[in-house]
Each structure stands twice: as structure tokens, then as C-alpha cells.
Image (tube, rainbow, N blue to C red; front, side):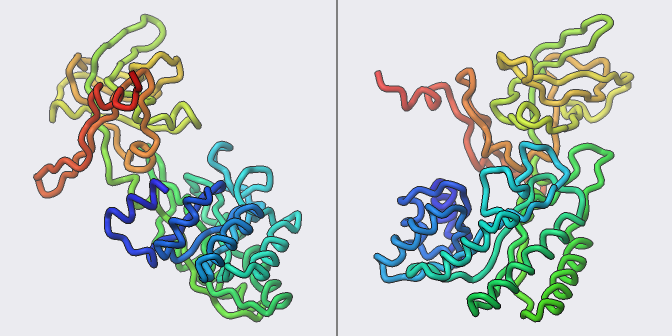
Length: 346
């Protein structure tokens, strides 16, 4: 509901929206139907029943995609792997659950099945996993056409395309990946004797991730002889819990001064929270004359930082500033301590 409200407030029409989620509430589904959301990705048997009833009561047939778990290992961290059988998302293909879900949707009075959806995980750097998933989903599309006489016209292979967080990272380029995936789906459809569907992917991180830099102020520097140097900043897992959640790696650079004649050393940039795992950058090369008050810039922080931000230790969340052509504009104001306490009931 929160993401839907953001889209509504920005003036995005329902016809441009797809609603996701493994546990959508009845009120969320009702809001989506009422706003005319183009596609709902159904994720469970409960949701098929729930959404069909809601749409039917409104005299509507909601177009849906069935989320299929194709049993494909994305070769990424276990906490962001979503295409294997044993996890909370979708209907597994290997057990026949996906086939049964398709049948249920075809028979549901308030639903119209228009296609299939899969999502393999996050920070995917191996293009071949999308090809394997495409083969398996096209096979299910062909089975649906044979069994139910329903030609599926949409195939969504989800998101997860990785980006570069470190200088040595070389993620696949969507411009290189797209024609390979399109050709694979075209061939699989031709071999199966079904029409080529409208093909979609959801490269959210690849769009948002590289666009944002997070700025921190150095507050404390601790040099532990024979161990490491700890550089504490005025944030941490309250604005970016990803390193603590699944070992996400970042780099950092000095932003306070444009030049420095100092040598560099490897330090650990840590947050200000009461957790030993509150690390922003495990190994950052920074000048040895780094000082309290310096600004550090952490790039590639546009994906999931703001959406995962929290008030741990009653830390206010930072502002968001848009910068273009040398001009800055406040987009989201920074929280105050009064904001953090606003919902407390005296």
C-alpha cells in the first residue's frame, strides 16, 4: 500500500503499475483494483481466492501474472536468492504447484490470466540464469496453451540485474543482455509452437543504484596498533543495513577535499550504532591524514538504502538531495528527533 500510494502521489496511472508482494492484504488488493493497476502478480493460493473475490464483487476481472519459482540458482547471496524452490515467494515449478496455480487462476471468476512472472534474486551478475529461467517458463506457457486453451501474452523475467559496487565489479550491461534474452525466448517459443509474448524485465537496482551517493561525516578515528583503523561516521545500519544483512560490499572516497598529498591506508568505515556488525565499508583506501569532520562519499547507494532506512537507536533518517547541473534541491527533508518521537503516545 505504501509503494502504491507513492506512485499515486506522483501521478503514475494504474495502467503503468504492477503490484508485487508475497502477502498482500485484502485492503491492499482492493486499493490496487480500485486504482486500475494493470497487473497483479499473484503469489499464493490464498491470494488467488482473495483477489478473485475482491474483483468479482466490483464486477471486474483483474489481469494477473502467476509468479513462478523456476528452480534456478542465481549464484548470489542466500538472503537475496528468490528463484529456488525452498523460499517464501511464488509457486514452485518442480512440484507442480505452478501448474495448479495456473489452473486455479483460469477458473477464478474475478481473474484473467495474461502471463507468467519470475524473479531469481538480487545482484545477479551471470546472464545465463535468465536464459535458464526463460526456457522453463516458456515450457509452462506452452503447457498452459495446450491444457487450457489460454495463450499467454506476457512474460516477466523479473529484476535483479547487478551493478558495480566496487571498482573491480563488472556486471552485465542490459544493452548486451537484452538481445540475448529476446532471442532465447523467441527460439523457445518457436520450438514450442506458441506466439512470442511481450517480454519484460524489472532492472530497478540498475536504474536507481548508480544514481545516488551517500555522504557521511567522520566523527571518530581509532587506530589499533597491529589490528586496524576504525573510522566512525554519523550513520550506519540505520541508513544502510545491507552490509549487516547479507555482506553487501561498498567503497568510500574522501569528499571533503579535492586533493590530498597524504599516503593512503586501508581502514574500516563503521557506523555509530550499538552493533559490532554495523560496518559501512569493511576495507576502504583512505588518506592517512583523514580527520574528524571530513566528508566520506559512498557511491552506488540509490538502491534500497532509503527504503531500508530505520530509526535504530532513535537515529533520525538523513535527507535526500537531488543534484543536477550544479544545482541542489531538497527532495526529502532529514528527520529530527521530534519526528522520531512523533508517534509516541504520552
